[in-house]
Every structure is written in C-alpha cells, then in structure tokens.
Length: 273
Image: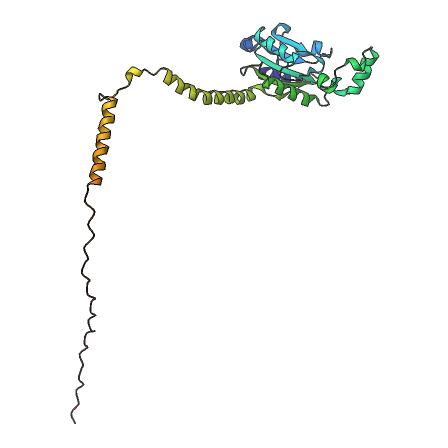
C-alpha cells in the first residue's frame, strides 16, 4: 500500500516514471478492495491502484458500506482472504458519492416509483441501508468494523482510503500497518495472561509422583511419637513444683547528701602604721 500511495502521488505530480511494479510485491498480493458500485470507478480504480485486475480482488456494494462485523459484506471479505488468498484489505470510498447525498425518504420515494411499497421494506431502514453524510466517516467506520470482525485475522492489514473521482488521487485515511501492532500486542497480552495458568497446569500434569522423596518413618509411627512427646510435656507441667515467690530484698538506705566543701578564708594583712 505504501508503494501504491507513493506511485499515485508521484504520477499526479507529473512524474512520468511513477509506475508501480506489482512483481516486486508478489508476497503482498492479491489485494482485496471494497469500493462503491459507481460505474465511474470501472476504468479508474485499476489505474489508481496501478495493479492489473488479476492482481486484486474487487468487491463492490452501494456506498462501500459495512453494516457490522458479521454482515454479508464481511463474509465476502473473509472468504476473499481465506479462499482467494487476499493479503491486505482496502476499503476505498470516493468523492461525489451519490449514496452520501441521498436521504432515507428519497430512497423510499424512489423505491416506490419502482413499485416497492414501504410495508415490504425492513422496519429500520437506517440500519439496513446504512446511509451516510460523510464519505470519510463512512470509510473510517467500515475499517473499524473490518478490524474488529472475528472473521478477519490479525495478520491481515486493513486500510481505509478515499479516491478523488475527478483526479484519481488517493487519500490514505487508515494505515493498516500502524494498527496491526496494536491488535497483535493486545492479542499477545491476552495469550500471555492465559498461558500462565496453563503452564502451571501443565507442570502438574507432567509431575511424576515417583520423583517425590518421602521420609522413611511411617505415618502412624510419627503420630505416635508426637503423642508421646505431648503427653510427656503435659505431665512435666502438671508435676512441676509451684513457682517460688521472690524473696524480699532489703531496702537500700537513702544516700545522705554531702555538705558543700568549705572555702578557705583569706586573711587580709594589715599594713604597718
């Protein structure tokens, strides 16, 4: 996908040698592309991707809408990867999409003009037809559904793009390579957390009881010796003489404080008359 975007942008900038060489990316092909049914995409999309039609699996529905992680479109995407060997998925919206400009009331009116009565339609038409007002938001929502679907493995990169119907320029909204590490690390963390008790259980299963070392003393003999020791200690306590009262100690007389030392008096000498 990086090479596709680079070639697409260089070609629009006027680079005459901006063609893609699909043979250099054989391990990443075929690419699974989900687009709208707009007939203007018929000649445009192979040129935009730079990949021959036999190198990508082209799935289409009105508005490239995905209504849920287990919808019929998700079934086709999953089988395209599992059976046809799709390596990466790209949901590609386009500018000037007629579905984004059509309301539910307009859909009802146009179906009525075709002889389809309202009572024959599903009750929740918003959920069933999945109309949208923003092409970008629809692509982001679809990419989230694909990435969160249990039908798509974590090794499949899921991209979201919008192509300009006039110029053919690709706008890369969702980089599937950047979201893959997050999903993989999350799954690894869950697996690691679950592996700890499994490892403990495995160690118990593989434990060989013959490897344990038991004491040679019999269990009954050990219990009997413990009972004899306990009985002996009880008897010693029962027949022990009562403790002697401590002998009174003579009272220590209080110390008499010593008088302060006498200071010698110095006699003043009288001077001779």
